[in-house]
Length: 217
Image (cartoon, rainbow, N blue to C red; front, side, top):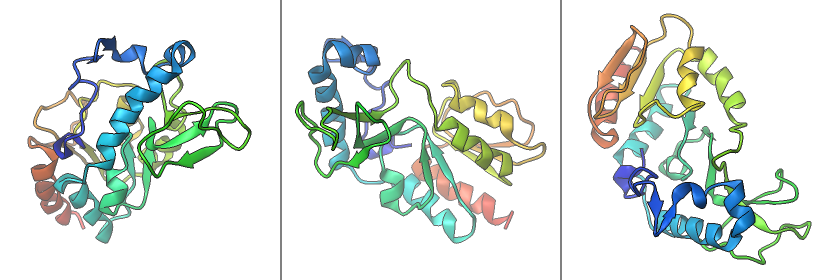
């Protein structure tokens, strides 16, 4: 979704960052072994985000709130949906502009600058870490997402291969007969007879999606 804004995905990096495997800088083991390196990895991602703007796809999805009760469930850790104007966004994998306490995970802080350093502490005096779900950690927000899928009258899937679990499994919670729209230049395998594919990137495909959804209003 955010690739068109210029943000690199893990796939864009080819699984590597500098000479490190991405899993070496995005896991609890990496944090324990070399927290400074992990902070530097996310600082670079965050710095890029601070310089990035929403694309037409983000803006188009935000416009859907004019006609629909819209909830966004995203695997992305950026906040470009919110900047574009979406008001109900659930981040499954955390948020790059936030940090949390290593002592009490419920203590989460918004970062107003891109750099998080060793020595930046929570109110309890413990080091702050990126508010990101790392490899090997549970995606606890998936339980918050399931009720939205179960209650949905329309489902839209944008810019995902639908191979990353547990998010890909959310489609299994749809009620029978619910229309599904998939916006992606590459057609993922969706086992649902009610799927309509829009084989375009988000920036262009969302406009076509809006036209399709207008027929359902």
